[in-house]
Image (cartoon, rainbow, N blue to C red; front, top):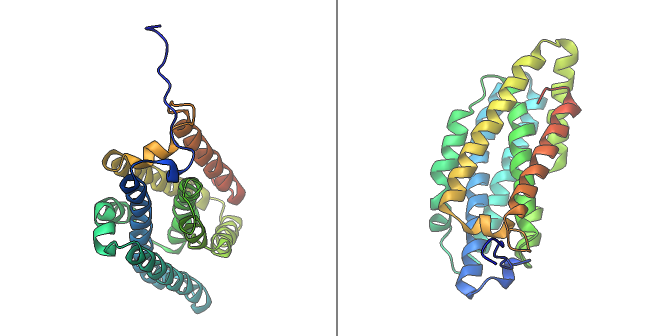
Length: 234
């Protein structure tokens, strides 16, 4: 009937995409985005470590930066194994990621930690969503290079301690977190518009875009819970 919705089955796994070149393109896009994200995060964390109030805290953030560069190398090596130049694979994502970090440069230690806790966690949640559609060995690689949970736990503990000492800090950090999320969404929309393969992956397996909406709900729910866990307002 004319009013019926046309239903097209979207792939349950990226391996079902055809032709083979399309499968490779989606994998390369994700790895390229992730690789450049790791590289920029290394630069950012190394700089933010200088905001730490003491040497032990500075060492933790510096260690986090070291993990980022190590993960970048693993992803870059995988891209080379796929016959792709890492520089070319990262090119489509450089402007969006650079602008996100330029617009969210922290002014102090607590803002730097909130960026780790909120910004990096949202990015990791998104990557986990995408990774479920990948085949081996890319799925395993992507999951392995996500941020170590101990770093999020460290940031959360620092934020809770700061709020316990001065509850008024909650308002400032809550506003900062909202800014982080808003900027992340803006740049994510920019990437999605230029790399439609990502949107295709989230299309529901019945053939509509409910999968995209579901993914956004899950990201929002996780973010809300994460904010509440440290005493920040969503």
